[in-house]
Amino acid sequence: LILMSETQSIIDTNSNDSYQDITGNLVSNATTATYSVQGASLSSAKAEYDYALAGQYGTLYINSSTGSYLYDPNDAAINATLSSVSDVFTIAVTEGSTTATNSLQIHVVGENDQPTNIILTDIPPEGVAENMAAGSVIATLATTDADNADTFTYTLVAGNGTNDADNGLVEIVGSQIKVKAGAVINYETNPVLNLNVKVTDAGGLTYTKAFALDVTNVNEAPTITSGSTGS
Image (cartoon, rainbow, N blue to C red; front, side, top):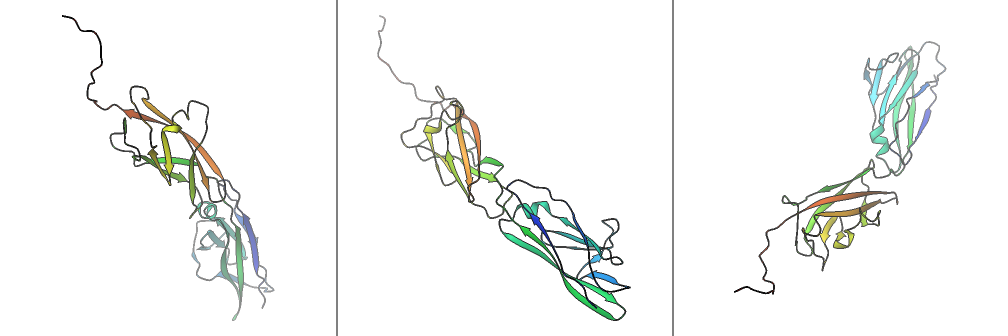
């Protein structure tokens, strides 16, 4: 009794992809056969298929009578991988008292996905207070990216002249936005902090986002200026 191996492939791209189901038929020389997948359970989730087994990157469904199969990819898991990986299933055909086994492999060619968002966290409860000392943390940067275990570098970049107007008042250290040495954030002249931030992932793909952060007024001590006085 002979059961042929099966190999199918899924190609990831640098976008947040949705993948089509993969279908096929197990091939054996049996005349009256029962097909199975090691570890599979009875399932009615997909019409025409009676057994299912979840892999790391999708779920395999099989018709035990005909040997037809369907692989339903897990979009999130595939988008998250940066390297080539595989789901490998042990398949079997039984005829009478004889069983033959082989493998069904779904090969996933991973790809670096582009960051899709930059998020600000850890903003002080009082907001960006004017006159914050140099080195004070204004916010922490985080990135949304489909890839697991990716790393990110943040930079301040030129924008349209308005959304980057205050880049010179801050610096990015690691993932933190800090008040730059010598910079003065003054509510009276700068009620909004306009920053334009770019994130670059380990594969060189980028995403840029502009932020407008409200500056809060701080009660400042009065100052005496020279001038004429009346008598």
